[in-house]
Length: 315
Image (cartoon, rainbow, N blue to C red; front, side):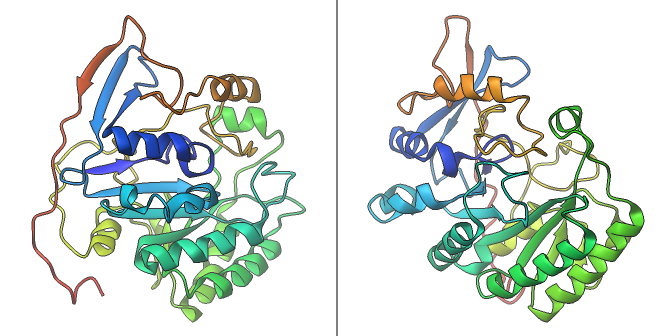
């Protein structure tokens, strides 16, 4: 199975101590975000977890401890998405400086291998300050630096969820013409640096020779990272247009402290601050603790690896 940690919050940036405590204990409890009394227990066991997937804007807090705690995480295969965008504090108020995140990306790549780390350049939106020309220029500058440390980049355009429109007043969708212009320029740059672009929930018409619309956390991406085939159970995808394996997420909404205006996972600052104050690094839950009315069930977990290795296919 695939254990996802990053669709709802940023665990490496804000909850690394809690995460390492969960590894020690060997399990984690996760509330259903829509039915909070329904709780799922996941065993944190490398015999059934084929790969742990992280998505972060700041891996540094976890990297600081990775040497002394290496035995905790080294028994698991991992895949990392690290978001690095051109946006400044007006958009991402509490994300560390880009230079720091890039340095952490490079260190993480050296630890995991470049096939197990992906750069996320998303979401893309257009304003007077962050124009099409700005994105093309910044993407090229970042690709030049990161190309020695990863062979892939995830690109997506902003989705105007109600929460996003509430927190990011005046934001608009990226037009089809702007998308075409950006992807054509990104593709040219990425080709020069040997980077494959994965579009995240975007129109397949934007695909190019080195740009696919198959998803960022797809079966193919994770098989390449693992170097083996996965027998993924047939089930309904989280989003019809997305082939990514997004289930089994141990995070929680309204818990990320970065404060990005475009965030879909946070409702507002008040809710986030309240939840973060209710975080206990010793609890099996990311936020709060067990309640009397909790109905806890064990997740169905088993390895999806089928034992077939094809080294040439995954090179």
